[in-house]
Length: 324
Image (cartoon, rainbow, N blue to C red):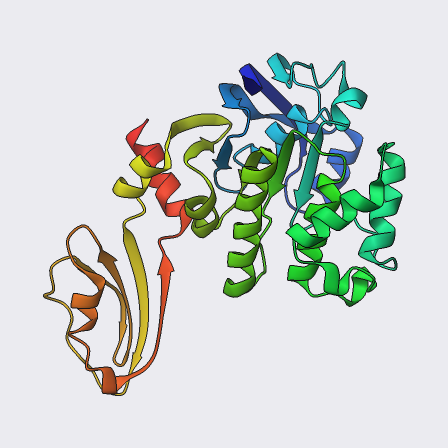
């Protein structure tokens, strides 16, 4: 069964433009000029019920515009959208009872209320029938928020707030959960905890998850399928395993040494920045084993080291170049 079906979807925006300078600004007020932006340009895809899909792309690619059209916030200029058998434009009110949203950078909880008071408030809004408190207890246990459920939201850490935000979005048992940067700003330990909870939620509640994120870790840990959008068009729709093998197989290493150690002639290693004892390099894990590369560094000379994935923007740019 399809949870989401999108066909030939398009959306344009008319944006006011002006040249630099005071007089040009004044002219633009009296006689404005505009340019048309194709935010979404004839895209199509479908998502199965219970599937977890990553919908990714650089800033301005059209991700948020698509989500807003799928949730009925924006009207499309062309094409069709079917979400849970409903048209988001005609059935927006009805659809609102079947979907949930979590935006990592936007709060839906009242900060002066506790999570529990917020949940009771949302339960009233969604006309939740039956034992609302039982539902709150179940989700509070699942997302491990019982220790701070009665603490004002303004006093919670970011990780605690995100968990409470997810619980608030699941109170009415939505069939689809839209997650927009759910782990942004979180430390690695909390990120990992949130990811595990999302996977557990998907498994136990069979909730369809539509995820947008700039964090490759989110995508790798949560999704088996990735849809990549750039400049309003879908450039790749593929299994995560296929993309991971081809594009996510490189690691960035930043290391601070007590003295200079040469790395230039190691197969699979590309030096990105070399400032004497501060070195940044890329390891192609299909060519070189990370531990083998690090064995060339005397552990006693390593003062600090950290690892990172290749920036998602670079991966998308590489894929986009291949498909143009």
